[in-house]
Length: 417
Image (cartoon, rainbow, N blue to C red; front, side):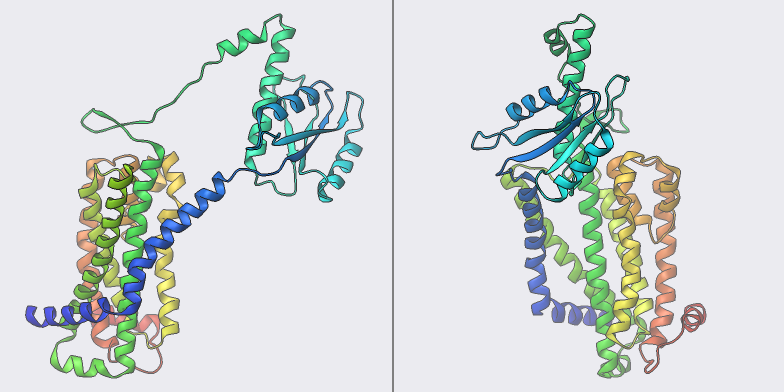
């Protein structure tokens, strides 16, 4: 049996690894990922090349002037011209705020100004300033307006209390807050937000790419062999169990070849540029969940893919499975903020989400020992159960043609074979 499984695995591996699609994807995917990251970074870091006109409606009457002076002096373009020109639209305590806003809206829509700030009053302890523009996604302008106005208001309030604004500047200390992660041994090690996030993100993306790539290849291989009637020849030489095991083993090797190649590129880049993209202190535990997650989803793809007869059905079904893999990526930021949340722990114990959710939680905050033991035990029970069910479906599904079976039929196959 083992010899036949290895023959099928070798055939599957060599057929796919020599294909142009695999070789192109092997090199193209890192190029696309790095290219997208660099392109996004270049766009984010790209400096403005022209001066932006920002309008100001100041009902207090004493902020527009200092704001214009400081914004034009502090923020400069590479050619030493001011990044912002402040245009006073309506200034004074007796202005008609509604008409001033209506006129500013017209100027903004006509692109005569890039946007405008509305300061109704700053007599209260907290001052509310609105910035309105056609593109509210420019957070840099809002942040700079906020910083400048806060310093102006603070200085004005200091003078009103007889305090020298220069003293106020001296009292404002510049702090550099460092993120330090505590290990279970009580030792501390520096672990920045970006590295923690990247560790979880890289692991999730690698598992996602491996499962999706191998799973889709597995399903397409079954459909192709069913449509060409090759599967009937195969099952005359090997049992359905041997065929399934060989396919899983061969395509697993293909997927791990892909991941190993990408990991090699990442390691080389880290050594070349001296940048540690991910934290490797829990790499062994992450690899355990990586393997468990792959084996579980391989069984799922086998089970749902073997009864299918067309490429369209395969794309539709696999897209539903992909959603389960995207969930932890969507939850990455909420998990970073509250890694001990109860809803996060509950999702961890759902077998479909266990590997990815643990991969998300471990770099952020190490779960309790009992959670690690329990989740690994859940996967060790779920994988054989999924493999047995997938084997029963595969035995019947690979020979089924014509109309695809209903969900009730597939469930019956999984239970009784």
